[in-house]
Amino acid sequence: MDRWMVANGRTATGGRRRGFTLIEIMVVIGIIVVLVAVVIAVGSSVKTKGQVSQTKIILKGLTAIYESYLLEGATAQTTTGAGPVNTLITNALQMPALKRAVSALPQSAIQNTGTLAAPVYQVNDGFGNAIQFVYVSTAGATRSWYFQSAGPNGSMGDADDIYSYDP
Image (tube, rainbow, N blue to C red; front, side, top):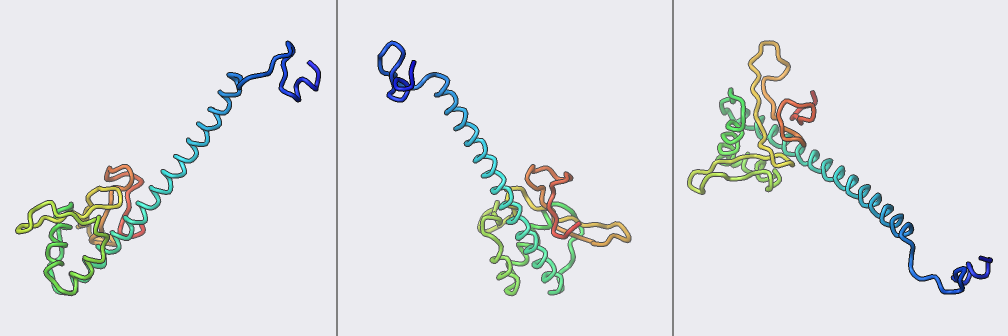
């Protein structure tokens, strides 16, 4: 084949070259697959970072509500789990000063799993996991309480847990 034939899209037998070869099509598909994988990975990372940020905002809000709750003369929680969070939100909604603080939390975080007559509030983190109140009864502990999120994997006690304080 001479250069003129290649430049004008002719084959060695003189016919016109039609379409793409299988190799060319497979290379293009491979490039598209790699690009899609990169976009999905970046999008997932951005989503997780946003959920972590939302969880930190919720934990800071709950900390402020609980500290104000204690300043109002309420009894401190001495149990661990999601139950104390329910009690905190239920009682805070009865106090005008704290009702505003509860309404400042992201509305997607607070769910009433009970009825209107008997509300049971659950506060979820950015990942949809219930936020836990942790009471520390160990003598000499630096904090006697804190709020904890299970983090991205949804399992408490792992390295990805998010706390209402910087550990």
